[in-house]
Length: 116
Ligand code: SF4
Image 1: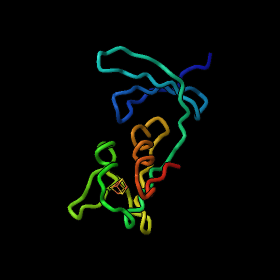
Image 2: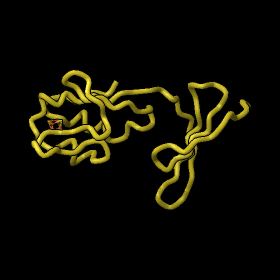
Image 3: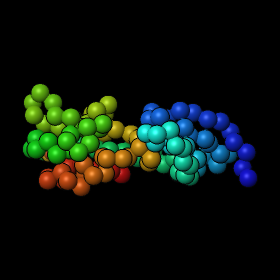
């Protein structure tokens, strides 16, 4: 068994336990009833990308995934916490943090949300 090298708290209330292999960790997840489960996760960095200039303001992403998306005062989607890269908004996340962003990308009628 690989010795542990450290622990951190992720942005959610999950606990990540790192191994000596920097690309793999064990994710200790707490459900609503304080029942913990573990699963191995790869700490792959991913990006959520929103091409805001092509948004039609339907609100599907913010309704389905309010933790990442909201409609701004101009009625167009905003990717919370993202930085601007030309006409795109980019949010860097870890693979296990993708969550509802994947569904938001699937339902966007103009397909301007990308996960990569
Ligand atoms: S689902 Fe797509 S078109 Fe609709 S608000 Fe979100 S980004 Fe804009």
